[in-house]
Amino acid sequence: MKRSVLSNVNINNFDFLRIVFVMTILIAHFIELFSIQSFQPYMVYINGRLALDGFFIISGFLIAKSYENSASLKNYISRRLRRLLPGYITVILLCAIFLFFLSTNTMSNYFLNGQFWRYLAANLTFQNYLEPCLPGVFESQKICVVNGALWTIKIEEAFYLSLPILYWLSKKMRFNFYIIIIITYIASIAYFNFFMAHDNYRIAKQLPGAFAFFASGILMYKNFDFLFDWKHYIIAPCLFLFIMEQYIFNTQILKPITYGVMVFYLAYTLQFLNNFGKYGDFTYGIYIYHFPVIQVFVALKLFRADTPLLMFIGIFSLILFLAFLSWVFIELPFLPPSRRSRHKQIFRSRFKYSK
Image (tube, rainbow, N blue to C red):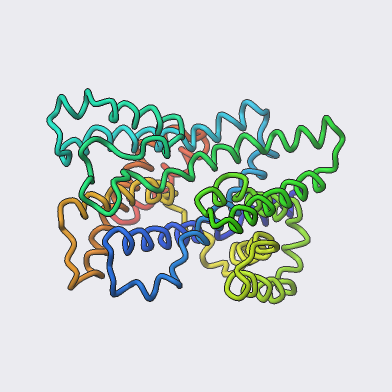
C-alpha cells in the first residue's frame, strides 16, 4: 500500500465507532438482564447483533492491516494474542474468585465443586458454552450466565488464525486473493441463511455465519483507495440496499458488504472524531466487564425501576472504571513498546496540562 494511502488509513474514527458499538451492546444487555419492561418498545432501535457485526467488520479491516504490516507470522500472532489474552484471562479469573461472595455454596463446596473447575477449563479455552455458570451464582436470576459477552472472543480468535491461512492459499496455491475471499463470503452467507431457515439463530450466528462480516472488512482494507475516493458516491445505494435487507426483507446476502461500506464511510468522515481514542482503548474492557457487573447488580437487587437512567449512569461509571484499570494495568503492559511509550507520553502531557 502506498505511503500516502497508508497515512489516510491510519486517520480514522474506528475508536469512536467501537465505543458506539460497545455502548449499544451494553444498553441491550442492561435492558434485557434487568427486564426493564418500559424500555422494551425501544429494543428495535438498540440492535446488539448489528453492533457486533460492526465489530467484526472493523476487525477484518484492522487485522488485515496488522497482518500486512507485521514483520513475520510469529510477530503477527504474538501481537494479536498479547492484545486479546491478558484482559480475557483476567476477567475470567476475577469472576471465578470474587463471585464466590455471591454464591449460595460454602467455600469448600464452591472452590472444590466440579462446576467451578469446568467453568475455568471451558472459559480459558474459549469454549464458554460448555460451562457458562459458576456453582450457586446467579441461580435465581433470568440466566445464570456469568459473562454472556465472551462467546464472541473465540470468533475473534478464529478470525486472527484464519487470515494467515487465506493469504497462504493465495500465495502458495496461486489462488487470486479476491476469489478466496468471495468464496468464503458466499459460504458464510449460505451457512447463515441455511440455519436461519431452520429457525436456529444460535448456530447461525457462530463463526461460519459471522465470517461474511470479517471478509467484508478485509475487502474494505484491500480496496481502500477506491472506497476512500468514491465513498460519497456509493454510500447512498449501499444504505438503501442495507435498509431493504435489514428492515424489509430480513435477509443476509449483500448486507455484510453494504454495512461494511457504511462502517467505512463513518470511519473516514467526521474528522473531528479522529482522536476519540487518544487516551486509551477502553472498548475491550467495557465489553468484557459489562455483563458480570450488570449480573452482580441484579443479584444484589440494587436496581431501582423508578430511576433507570440514573442506574445506568452509575453502572456504566463502574464499568468504565474497571475498563480503565484493565487498560492501564492489564492490557497496555502487553502491547508493543512503541504504543506503550506513546500512551505514557500522552498521559504525562495531559497531567502537566491539568496542573
